[in-house]
Amino acid sequence: MGISERPANGSDGRQAGGRLPSGRHGLSREHVASSQRARIVLALFDAVAEKGYPSTTIGDLVERAGISRRTFYEHFPNKEVCFLTAFDDAVAHVSERMIEALASVAKDDWRERIRRSWRVFLEDLAANPSAARSLYIETFSAGPSLIQRTTAVNAGFAQMFRELHRRARRQDPDLRDLPPAVFDLYIGGTAERIRDCLHTRGAGALPELEDLLVDTVVLLFGKEPDGRSAG
Image (cartoon, rainbow, N blue to C red; front, side, top):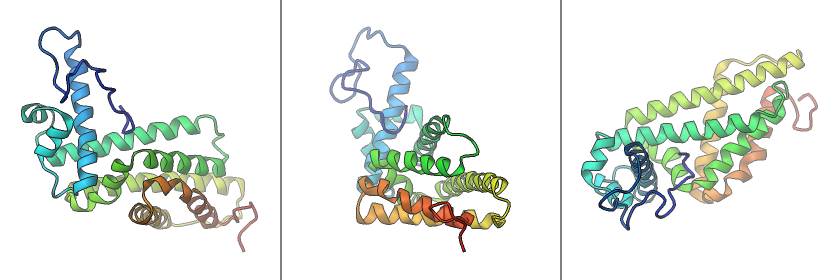
């Protein structure tokens, strides 16, 4: 289940409060467990976005997810592991969406691949404001494990742009070579722009950053946004 998906009311046979009715409900244990896990992850994003990670308790999560504490601990040993899982689920979800969006774009069309990647990424964050705030703001207060996970994901995105730059230079050998740290700097800068937007205008405004983020990396590659070589 992606971060934008929520179980529909009654879709898993639950009564109000998220409890399964007594007797035979016709659902497999795997289905019930998957639904419970998804509800906990969504509850975590909502609670963390509203209260902040340090103030969010297991009680907040079980109340919002409509489960018991025992059920929570059947899935996660503690709040930190739950947040790590939610983080990984969100990254996997948006990565899958980006792969789907890029499937129809030629591998050497690096401009369109950059634009399509940012469009999907920003639209997904905008559609999931609680997840966006949790992942971009609250990870800093969630401890070293979350910070390390964020660093690793950012390194992966930097690698993606290094590969796009390699393809751009293959098309235009006159483009300057760039050290790997430049791409790390770019990803760090885009993260700051996203955080600033979340703080000042909210998640709904994130898609408006598309042109800025695309034009910046095109200039970084050594091209003007209109295709001319940068002076």
